Image (cartoon, rainbow, N blue to C red; front, side, top):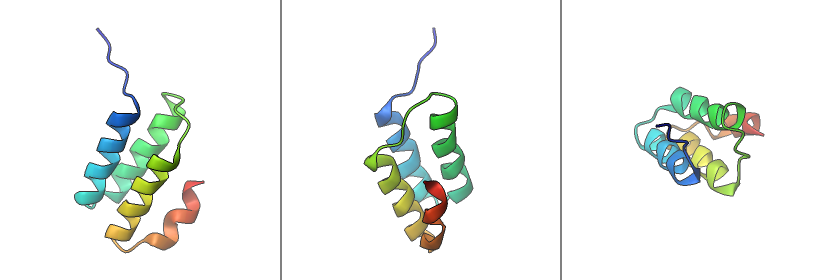
Length: 66
């Protein structure tokens, strides 16, 4: 049995990465959802990435997540 992640799972993972200050891992999951599962990023994902980068004071890197 295979379980495919949905939007709720990816938002939860990205949010958890932000609270654990896991920038590199958060970015990998962000890319993974688009490249592997073909889930088009929506505002929720970009919000999580912005929160992650703000949390570790790297907001200037947000321009790379387009």
